[in-house]
Length: 325
Ligand code: HPA
Ligand code: ZN
Image 1: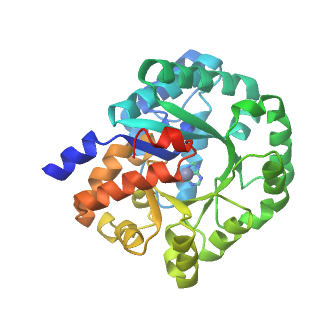
Image 2: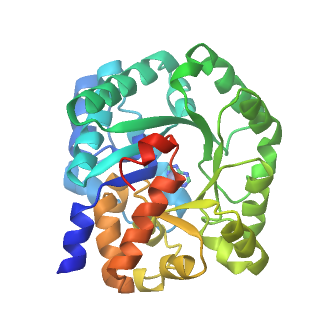
């Protein structure tokens, strides 16, 4: 139908994407073999069968285990380039990518190795397709603020390659305020900050993310439980990077028909559509648009608004944005 063709045709952004969450089972097994890592699954189909999550933590356990196959620069290059190729097919022209250095440095993989592999792929996508990107260093909130400070310290020599900072991993019990000093330090470095908030955590965590000085809220779907918060987010056009298939797979919503995406648009929120961890959640960004269009009966005007919101919410310069909107 016409709306599906529109989704396929429009140039898009992706602003909430964990590069470690794009590791497809086939590549996971190939790298496990290459690097002598033993996976606790017999084959690709046994691994895929395990992607049956009950909440965020049940996913994170598998996500961190999977990331263990990534060991050298070429592994990070292949991971990233495979994602960029897939995103290009969805007409993604600009992507802002999270990476979790603590997940890798804790296993003895140097920060520089992770960064070099990712950056080689980003540069190639720029040359090959003109695809632009930004890179967001994301801190793991289940670890301490001190651990995050150490990760930041390690990144300082490569600060020019880091476009901003984020906060991810297990949300409940690890509120944004736990990282107030770390985020203050990041902002002092002159970089934008974002944080996951209101995925599983309460609206209070979204308020706390705002207090950290974020320029976007990642997920933020539970903000809808607080009218004053919604009013503030809408009035300030604070972007929310919504990930519908992620919310479905992690049981944040019971069915996509109950997803608040349409309500967010109606309330004037700057909601965007993203894939989060597409290899684990059963769909890349185009699939997220298509699934929501069908489940929520979105019209062409809704799709255009969501796509425009993506450019508005991005860290592209105004002149770069003007190429698309
Ligand atoms: N939420 C929190 N942390 C994460 C996610 C997510 O969806 N994906 C990877 N790390
Ligand atoms: Zn995420």
